[in-house]
Length: 68
Image (cartoon, rainbow, N blue to C red; front, side):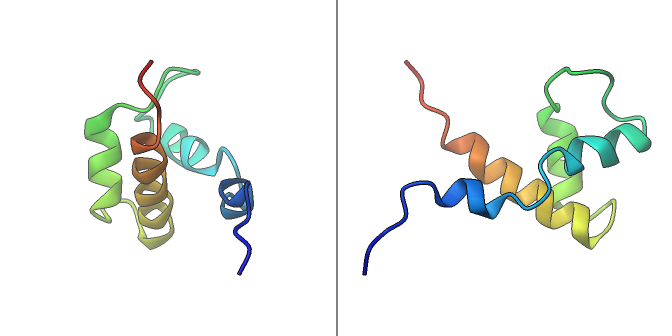
């Protein structure tokens, strides 16, 4: 079975939707990074199930970040 090289690109169906939702709730301003505390609250399901799924994916993708 061949692995896809860019599977993350396919996992993101609506890029920016988490940030847009958090802006609606006035938890994020402008283009600043989403604070870890806000991301944790969203991942617990405090802002709805769809936002919860998006926050869990964002936390997962954040852990992929390489430290150079």
